[in-house]
Amino acid sequence: MVYTVHNSGYNNIFLTILTLGNVASIFLNKNNYDLGSFAMKHESPEIRERLEHLKKALQNAGIKMTPQRMEVFREVARSTEHPDAEAIFKKVRHKLPSISLDTVYRNLWLLIDLGMVTDLGPPGDRARFDGNIKPHHHFVCSKCGAVRDFYNRDFDNLEIPNDVKKFGAVQRTVVEFRGLCSRCYGK
Image (cartoon, rainbow, N blue to C red; front, side, top):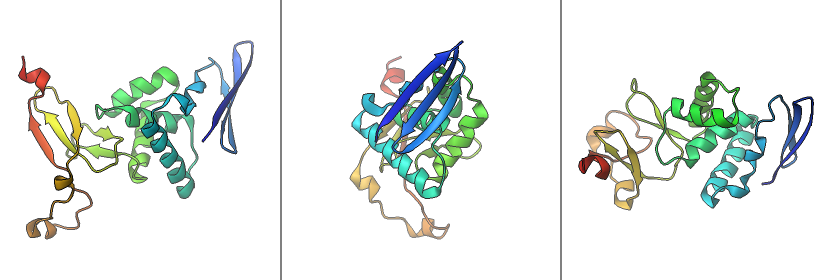
């Protein structure tokens, strides 16, 4: 996947053309925002793979790739902190100052619908988002709220108890350990 960004400016009004493959998006870019950050060459191979997967999922769903959507996804995919929408908003706003919190939420819920991110925690709590869609589990610090991923094949292959099957169809299994993280435990 190749992103190219062309900027030309006059009187502090910049025209930015973002090309993704054979699709070009044109933005009037009043403040010359750094849309060059869309270039994936500085991303890790895992993030590039996730962005490629996002592109295919959006194409299959007939949904347009927008700078806002890409940056929201990129922040979730890069993070190991399982950020909430407000934290994602603050990070994305550095690159796209005109983005709204509503736009961040709408894109997060779309990304969940596409299976590109998951949400964590019980309904009604402040939603946190996870860009790691590989099978994994969580350690949650009960003091500071830090969430860390860990991998365990035995947990990935847990047999669903019959009592749980009575409740309905299980879509995914996540094991969550709660306790004190090493930083809080040492205090």
